[in-house]
Length: 100
Length: 255
Image (cartoon, rainbow over all chains, first blue to last red; front, side, top):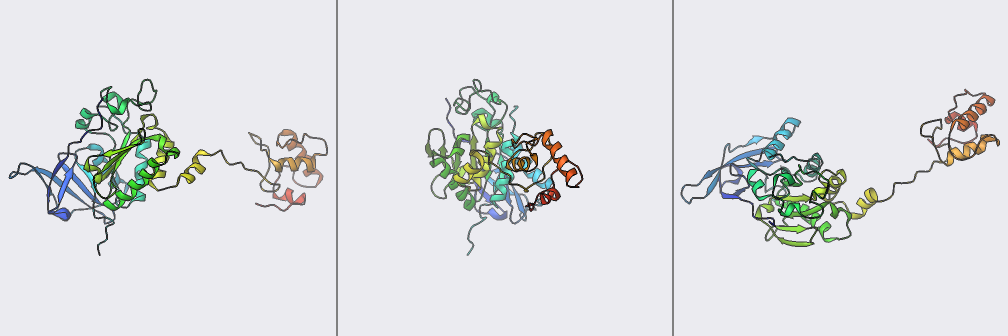
């Protein structure tokens, strides 16, 4: 009987945007959608093969990100991103952190 | 692949997002790669019959008669701060074997803010290391028997919001509250089903004069007697005991 096993995860450095220089991870090979709901912003990080080390890197499409409008259609789009399983949907890790 | 996302599980998402400002929906149905591994993000019919997620008593169908088409897990991504709060709440329920909410869930994978992510198994009552993607997304598994059970969804919402066991029990597990109506606390009239209560009993005793059964049940005989009383007292003979009639009977309405 198969027990819960390791899910494939794509790991690599992030390039550009709010995660620039940090390590990123995604459960889907196309990359991830980074969402900061309180700030109303989202960024798409596309996963690319990293030529030098043979791993991966996540490159932001638009450094400034997209405005996240929380109307019914925007919420449906965000839910669709999670349903379509091409991009991981990840909450901004800094939300709630003490910036002092 | 035909795995479906149960509406009941998805109904938890907006509640989760309301409770945690960082929370975003991260998936219910697994992708094709997930299908090969199986698990609660995949329906019974879309995976091997020997997979871990389809053999437990509350998961296996058959012999169970629940859906074979539905996924039975929810992924929510959160910031570290919210992940720690959320995981603590779920772990508190996992740790309390008397908590009735436990019965709906198989396991939860989350992170308490340091070390590795963990998996808390509600059936085996064990905790083990999990993959570190669960540091940023919490994975909660419904027992497949309850994937479409609204009460299971309410249990998930209750845990997510940090509701106490006592509050859940009082609202969801106790007997329905008994409502008693004192005289002049409402209008009385003939309805289907009949209105019943101590206020009806009082009315029948007050105006009955031995002519009707005094049983606390507002039936046609009681309505007829009300009309007789109203006629006698110069009121409009509606058969309905309203505020005016209660006052006529010398009782101040309390509504």
